[in-house]
Length: 257
Image (cartoon, rainbow, N blue to C red; front, side, top):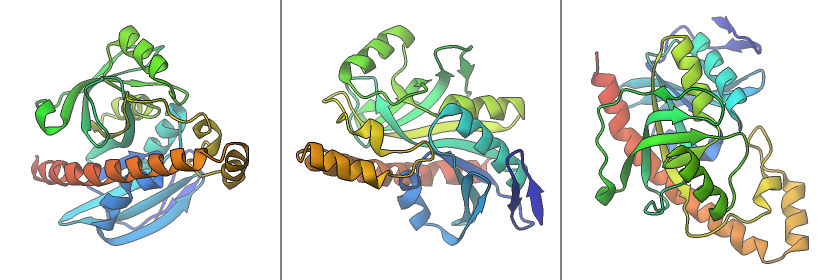
């Protein structure tokens, strides 16, 4: 079967997915998909899709690349191709709450950006900071937030506890198409330090690593190697914790009516 989307024609099989996942970068769900079976990868237009089974649950995922507009289009493509009952905006986020640590989980009960109306999300999950679970308002922005000062300013301005670049667009698309929605993310950078300035040039819009920029960064500042290695280690921690938490989420959604 082929399903037409606004960006292209996406090839898929005739079985609908029960749960759809939208993430910006492949490494965000690398641990989770390592736990899945019968995983198939295919491309459609500007997006990469993966489908498979998590235990008894058929899932489909789209890598949107970075940014709310891209994430909204990717969500539309995923919904049209697989018609999942649920969509989960997932991946990494930056902490805006100073108590949060790398690898801790954020579940949104409201999503905001800097222009539009807040979008409420009805969830039955209670916060448990002692166990690394935070529930609250999350913020979607159109550029990477690199410094502690920027994060503190955004937290004061919006009341959000975490920031990413995709969730609002995903939530908006789900609301327009009347699809049930959750936002579940893992903290990959906290408020303990600034991200290295090189990060702004290393990752492209689609989420691909610009290897020329990596080489250039190393030549200009050899110490950036240590910073990038630490970023990688934090990302690995976040991906592992996210996979662990998604395990319970997927099982609960599978059992829900």
